[in-house]
Image (cartoon, rainbow, N blue to C red):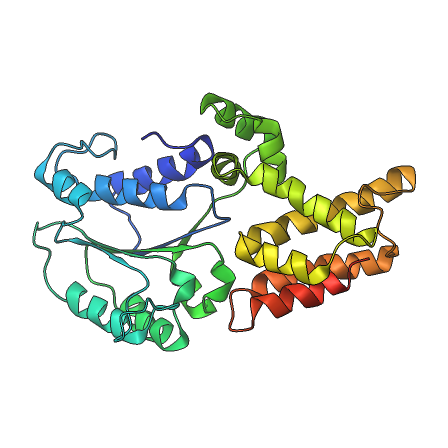
Length: 311
């Protein structure tokens, strides 16, 4: 698996640090979902543990690589959502998991080299877990590397962020992203890239999942509601049943296009009756609603309230 074009600089810098034995004890890999942070992390970790790497690349054939791929390497662990006592998956990383991690890192490496632990998603640690991790970050063991992966690094306490070397992935240029999509055989690459807001990884995923059709459905729904032909409750239920967060992303895009259309021609593609200020408020409400879907509030009520204010 090759490094994605927009990852090459980060990869080169990390390998240079490794070559001069100047690796940090903690890396924070962050940036929008879809830019390959996790693939980058796995590849780097495997190369670090590999017994015969070539320029940081894992050989894929040594005992260490075979164990890594099988998920049984004794010096590598991934910390993610665990299970509650009733068998239901947790929605956050809790303090007991971090304590187990600290106990593990206190032991010597079984292969005599690096011990690598990935916390993913690191921004899902609750406050107690983050505080417990802070102690490990303040007193790191030699040849121990913590890899924190976060789509929303701002949810991490500043005390955690400040103790990690930050590797931030940014959206590539339009030409680089489009070329990468075309090389990977993505149909309607330009349309998919536009739908994903310039994010090539999301564009590829969404194209394969039929998200472009979903995007058109959202615009059709908003157009019908604006014309008084649709029922907000029916639309809310349909959105909730099928990728609500993605549909809200597309709804925000549609409103942005409505504003642009009015500025250019005096009318927008959705023919909304809302004035410019109300459109701006609704746009912000869409993004707040998408964020609120992560919480405990009822999704159907959140969507119904939002759509009831669209005309």
